[in-house]
Image (cartoon, rainbow, N blue to C red; front, side, top):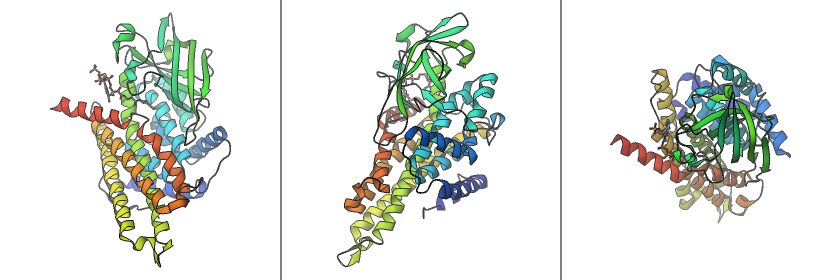
Length: 396
Ligand code: COS
């Protein structure tokens, strides 16, 4: 039984506690023990189920079919933490509906918001976020995909890779160089954001990528892909900031997902160590096991404090209508600490399970594969360090 005492912390309101309880009950019925054969159909089914439960409504604002007036970071974190504790793929499907549509919620025109966001909440459209390129991952501003304005349309050319939901998405939020401020050499400037429907001529899913914790992932090619200028998000050249603002919201939820994986690992380790007989005692009677369990529990609380601080700060900023308030460094700290710590916690859980811990299909074996990518995507740990340092040096 996962520890829920953190819900009493002052970061939360009663609505968050009710959300955590309701979701936990739903997940126990709909996700526990769920298995799947074919990845794409499993993801489509999960998106439909998450929509049916009303959970995707937390990915978009209420005016466009969502549950709350603004996207609420603490709710996103509770959702991802709980889903990850039960089933990593469900967490993935939920997270991508949010990340893939976040740029529309932040910067879309009224028309784009009305066209796309209600479908995201209803699970009728699957969303994707397309920023990374073969030579522009951590250095996102090095992107070279171009968006050339021709009359009332932009023409997109280039290659995006590591695109989650690539191949099953109905639309992609694409970041490309529209060149307002001097073409390819202008770094973060001169990048614009667009919503591109998956069936737009010139958009091709070139290659699916298999990873250790399988989820839909692909390389996407744009070849003379014509997109109406009305599909642009925000002003020309505002794309990099829109991308960073989107990541500011969802990075805290990556920390929460890591926390969910870590909590599950501790639960599994507790169950195993209190029942496994060894040398006439149980594993949990040994001080070395107790030391491991103590480190795991402390790591979980450390991560949770940073994660929910970041989420609470962002929600408070919105509540006070301080729209400019950035939580960039707090979010980066949470993402870095929670993902790195979860990796260690899960590794310890595998060790406590011994040989059984590396048997395919065991929960801790699955967690071991699932956690790894979180230390890389949405800004690798090394990038989070750069971001934290940049922010504190800037304040200094
Ligand atoms: N919110 C709003 N604006 C932001 C921002 C944020 N969180 N972060 C940066 N900006 C703005 C800056 O203020 C700057 O604007 P001005 O020139 O008007 O001041 C502009 O964006 C460029 O910022 P910066 O100079 O810091 O850009 P860099 O190219 O140096 O950015 C980092 C470096 C590492 C922060 C960036 O490339 C990054 O986050 N990389 C990781 C990308 C990532 O997560 N990739 C995975 C994608 S999803 S799997």
